[in-house]
Image 1 (cartoon, rainbow, N blue to C red):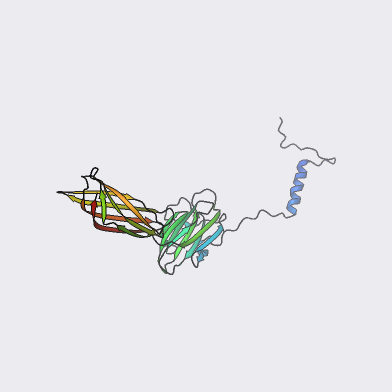
Image 2: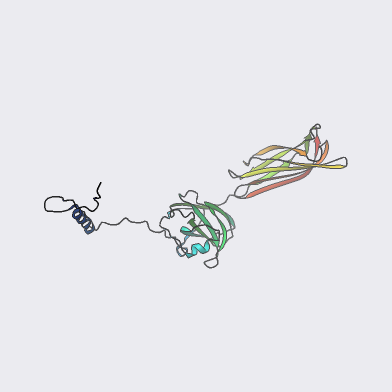
Length: 281
């Protein structure tokens, strides 16, 4: 088929061409002053100089960062090795007491990175950094500067969902060991029992209880270890750990227990007990 791209096609009598008609339409539209699409403005906290001050916790902010830019201070603050510092926005918070603070941006629709810094331009010191969320230790009266950015180099920002809140306290653990345990004379395995109570746990956190058992049998010292996990739900739970010795068998009589329990959420708590127990059949 012939190329008709530049062909002039007669329109109505009078010799007006399709090209001329198109030109006249463009001129007419321009003369009407049709506005170009309006772009979103850059966020007011796009720079360090215009950072948003957080006055109290908890705090939340929803922000369109698609028109946010990046500058030399973003690069200076990037002491965490982020590949890009696009679409940056800045916040500031001065705690009135020592605290652990959780900053979360996981509700955002783009790849958010967070830097938490002390100091000022030219002397920034990184306190914490991460993708989607960080927890940072804050000291009373010390200013925290928070920089949120798009770190993946694909696109530029989006809908930012940011929250900042005090971290819950670490779990509190109360561990006990029963005065008596049991042993199996055939296998030489011993079982140590007790209770553990853990409060203020965090969903998805980790918990574990380990037991070390040592016993003198004749001229030899027999020892072994075992462990179990436990729930951190504020109620007392009975536990039992079976311990096998690598260098012999446990027998009836006195033995020394060293038990250690820990649980972690945003922070960790622990408790330990060392005592003598009696192993019985």
